[in-house]
Length: 135
Length: 298
Image (cartoon, rainbow over all chains, first blue to last red; front, side, top):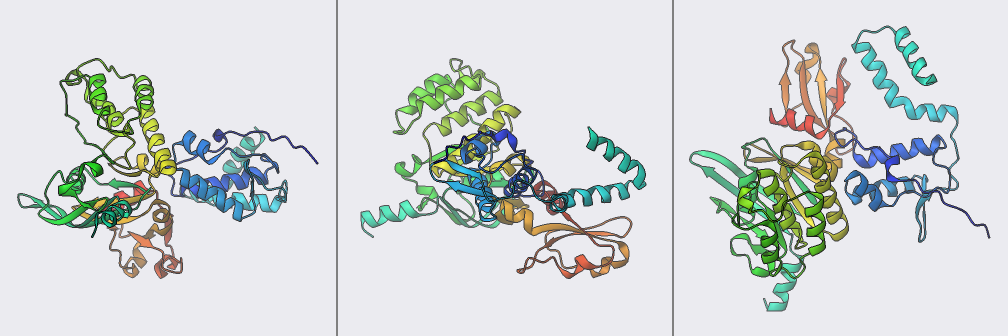
């Protein structure tokens, strides 16, 4: 039998923007997806309990629980009896580059649109982005 | 109905139910055929501009005001004739608490705790300490913010099953406000407390509310789950040359100076946006609740 140690991540791992047009449960699922895809949340990692997340962010436990269930149904998370939610073992530690890039698509679309609105040519925007990425 | 059957009916009735509320102050209609029901364990945020009728609706719901027409039930009992056993399950914080002002907070809590079997002494002590409330000063001498904090503690201490808060956060600083929201979220989620709170600060309710209701000019314009509201409505912007093809928009329509048009659109049953969103130059913007509210209320 293998004994695994669970590293405990706390609720501050997630950021929640209540005023966003994206419902809070979706914000949580998308963040989990990115953190798992990027390997920051490795398989087996124990997630903070529903109560911890709800209490920390002052959001409804039902919202958190809805997010966890959705992430579970998508195979991102796994319910461990008596322990809570963990990152699913079979979820690949890191997605391919193209898949990870696809997760950034909404943010890239927003950036492109705002650059056009500001009538900025591509070059200075890309230069700035390049600098930020290397930080 | 025998006593047992009646007790069961009261037990299983919606915590709060209102139908056909209409009310006028002088000639001005403040409530116009309002229907509203709260499901157990839900947190309903009632949004409306100042003077939209929020306090009138809340007071009428609880039987503190007799509306011109319509009826209200609290746990199945007519709001105008609540029994003590239903009152025990109900906590209400008015916008401007003024009861028992000649007592200190400590004296009031000591007095009230005798009437409520589930009074949570530890919660009272902890919260008074954290919120830095002077519990030995006569309440009449405290600031409105301090009075409101005391009244929130007073309403939460008996562990009510239905909590009604009229603009609860208006006099709280950001830290106390966050704490109140946490308390509301956890009580509703874990103890099944049903909560109704009114506010004109939309961000307060986005965190904890499961449902929202927009009260505008005495009418309830929207009443749905928060997540669904965000996913179902958006703002469609149409340039001037195609503005004539705008869909009917009962919720909000604005013509801009350059002839372009903004309308609030709703997804169809199949989840798709209306045809007009595919017009050339059309743009669909997702809306937070605050933007949606402003579009509707303007």
